[in-house]
Image (cartoon, rainbow, N blue to C red):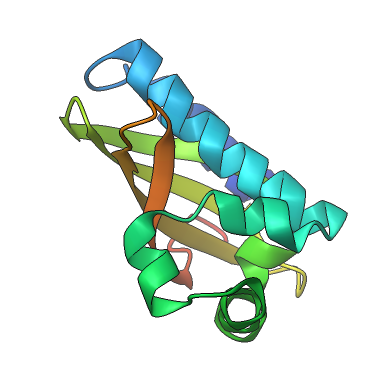
Length: 139
């Protein structure tokens, strides 16, 4: 619980910064991240997989392979105790980079950097996630 306070404080400070680019695009990208994390937490593997962009689906062509990768390499994203959005950068109207600060199932702080691309159907899908231990104060 002690690590949660610095994480949430850092997230609040980052969230106070103005969002780069178009607000609607950023909110849409964040909604995709939030929905995927919600699906992970609910155990809805099919729904979680639906937020993966085509490039990820080519690498992991079925739900079982995708979930194996997530469960083995991305535990803090798969089962976070809590999370908050941090810095965001709109690379273009169709490309967003979003920082997500997480407390993993092990109680430690993590930083996930999501990249998302706008798809032809108008939704943002996740093209990649980079995960590392957080450098937040108190981590």
